[in-house]
Length: 195
Image 1: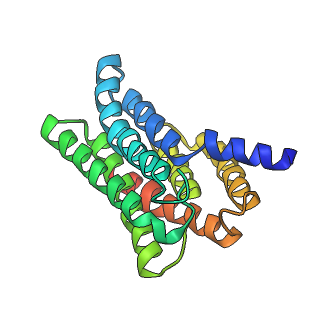
Image 2: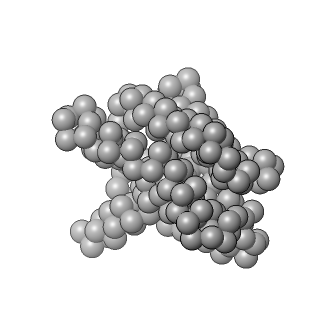
């Protein structure tokens, strides 16, 4: 029982929406070094990539449209994916029109790419990939590209998140491993290349 409590805590505290809310602020601070611009550009990405989609997901879960705010049922993920892609796409458009710094646009693009690839795997290959490890795997690479290579020391967090998802029986080991690789490449490496 204690084991599941720790797994649930990790799953909630290090959930995708948490990473997607705070990562843009951390990137924006490095890029701008200015509190106002950090909040402006960071929150554009954070709100459109995290807050708006999560509000839609939670509302749908409460209405019984899917099995919870983590949407563990593969077939139930279409609307949440489309909500995330649409909202983040709107945020990316705001960044472009508003003249945001290029790394913020690159960040939104890499997050968008991760969602599109995950959607393709989920419905094209009909296989459930872990978005928890996809987002955290991409975030670690993005932080390394933004700050320095020493942030590879955050990589064990991805493993911890994977452990929590498998322990809760929400994913298999293969699903968390593929998620981490998908996020690292489609999100992290793409961001690094775009820089």
